[in-house]
Length: 162
Image 1 (cartoon, rainbow, N blue to C red):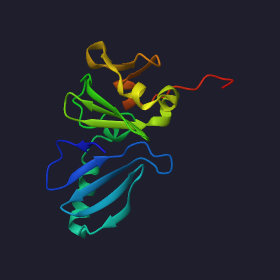
Image 2 (image 1 turned 135 degrees about the horizontal axis):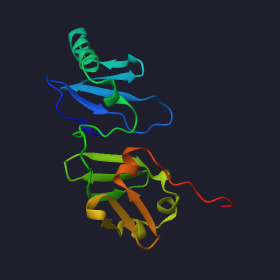
Image 3 (image 1 turned 60 degrees about the horizontal axis):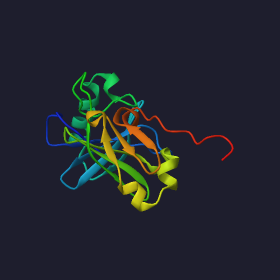
């Protein structure tokens, strides 16, 4: 999960990634202790070793942050108006992982791209960065994915009749 940058204090926050079984959430970590907060509404979902003082500090981060920052589809730690660009891409057995120029790493489930899901490992490994880094093209399978589409959770539907 990408780290949310610019959060003061000793806690690292990790923004939720797409998970069919869970609502929008953030993980917080301090040393080896972690917790998870649901975001709508803000509720502690799990705690593994954080003190009550730590949990209060993490809650304050949510209370003092613009609510629109947490809505689904907003890129984590992105400067308003920034245009995210991809530096490299990986396709694993389960994920499409984009490494962005600004240092963030984002991922979506491989199932979001039926063409990549059906592709061979060699076809998945051969890609071209397009649009000055705003997207990725896989020539062997004629698939295009934009960074904005990954951030906004836009998936490619499989054609009917397949």
